[in-house]
Structure formats: C-alpha cells, structure tokens
Length: 100
Image (cartoon, rainbow, N blue to C red):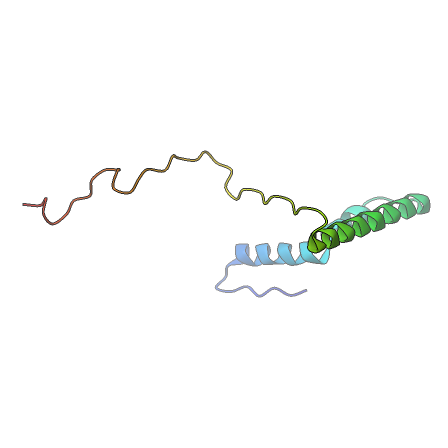
C-alpha cells in the first residue's frame, strides 16, 4: 500500500493511509488475529456474519421494492439550533443613505 506525501504534509498522508487501511479491513483483521480463535468460535462468528449480511441484503431489497419504509436520515448537525429570524429583522446594516 502506498501513500504519497505532498509538500512534507505527513499528517494528511497519515489520514489517507488510515482511511485506506480502514477500507481494506486491515484494522479488523489485526483485531481478530490479536489472540487465538478456536475453530468452533470461528465457525459461529462466520455464520453470524453471513446471517447479518443476508438480512442486510434482504432489507435493502425490500426497501427498493417498496415493501418496507426506508429509515429516516439522521440529522447532520446535532448541535443547539438558533431560531431563524425574518429577513431584515436583525440588526440594520449601514447603507449609503445612512452615511452622512
């Protein structure tokens, strides 16, 4: 895996590398290889992953066909919201007429 470092910006290159590794599943594999996994545990884990994948695929297909409703999108910004004011109701901006 290669990442180009541009303008000696190592921080950006590290971010790109981490993103690539995350996409490839290297972190997940490192976590599973950290300790020994018995063959029976491996079989049960793989079976559970297969069930999860098939359920997800079935859910997506049902949403596409219109059998079930799509989940509501999560709000992007979860901070306190300021009430909106009507245009022109805020502080007056100086105009050419007010300057004398």
